[in-house]
Amino acid sequence: MGTVLALLQGAVERLRRFAYAEKEPSRIRRPRVGLALGGGFARGIAHVGVLKVLHDNQIPIDCIAGTSVGALVAAAYAGEVPFERMQQLAAATHFTDFGRLTLSWMGLASNDRLERYLRRYSSVSRFEELKMPLTIAATDLDTGQAVYFSEGPIGPALRASCAYPGLFLPVEYQDRMLVDGFLAAPLPVDPLRRMGAEVVIAVPLESASFSRPNNMAGVISRSFAIMQRYAHQDWRGKADLVIEPDVKNFAWDDFQQAPQLVAAGEVAALAALPRIRAKLAIAAVQPAARAQA
Image (cartoon, rainbow, N blue to C red; front, side, top):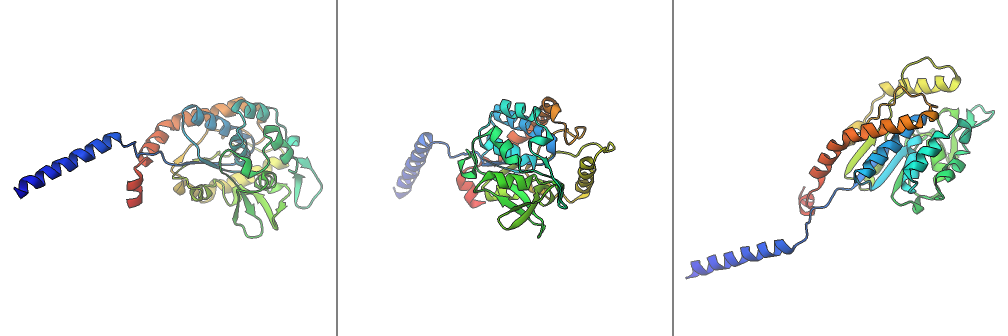
């Protein structure tokens, strides 16, 4: 009798669990996605194409980080600037929009106009006003370490991230002498992990092809491009996915090629969509399974 009762109780319990499971909402949730955007002057316009494809195909971005021009595009995206507006402004950009020639032993130009340039995109001026978490990477010239900004005014952090050594003056901010973030954080993947990203997508911009430079800015750009080519790129091992727009044949100041650069970003992002969706599907596990991992 006891055995029969135990069997009946077991059957009732299994039936109860089955009925409860039918009513329980799915515990599967999507992973938190972070996007890291690299630098490359005008080649950074390709980031607009990448972002547009991700948006149009419902690939969520929960937090974003950028270096140099990647920081500018990331700030515009986090400030909800429309893609069409980004492309229009990029196509109309000239060096004098963000650079001002100056006499100094520290650089050829100041990028103090960059703060005004950002206001052409968005009225947002502080990190706290953005629609999503943003981190901007710069390099401390004294320590050689990466410095990450995610609160306070956006302008000074953006200027520091875009202060290309030799071309632009270093930016003095928060008791630091800061230059372009690409030196210490070419793809700012680490802060995205600290922002809670479970899947990190990195978008590097390959340096221009090796045609002979014809001015000082070209010499500086080419020199750093060579250095980066042979540098250890440890960020690749930290990113889950990499989207690489084919922009190597564009010059650092090819702003007039904005439509072609946007298209290059779109092509690369479209090609990466299957890998992105597969990665998100794998990462979308039940919270209980995450806790046990």
